[in-house]
Length: 158
Image (tube, rainbow, N blue to C red; front, side, top):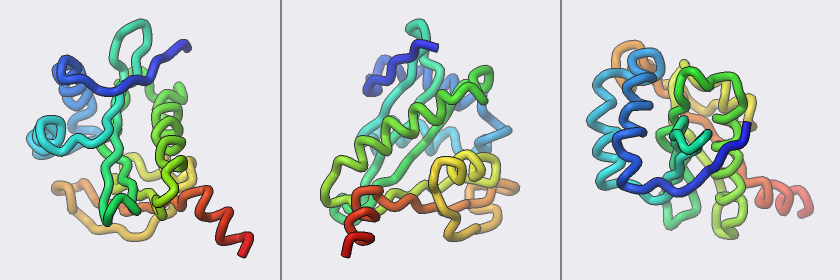
């Protein structure tokens, strides 16, 4: 599948909100929709869409904490019809490559749920903590970490 990953634009808002709608309530609680809209309007740092034949089929972002030493994988959504086709992996790897190039970055985290933690585990994230019913009733927080590959290599050399 020939896909394109590009930066999010305000004109993409309706399409990514539709992705959220299609992924609710299986992957997101209904109560998370306003949080996502607020994120798109006020909290974006780096956000990307993945397109297939000029149709947005996924989205996901990067945010930062602690003077940009912590990278956060945020609001990943893939159209349900495209699950299992490695498009989420492609989008995640795109962002990890960006993060890996940042010299000051120490760690990448994702705050997800029990509905997608296996995806992140398959992609090198390690579970640190589970908080039951964090996002909403039946949506637990799975706090996971992925060490910067360059930082890991440097610490192994020492």
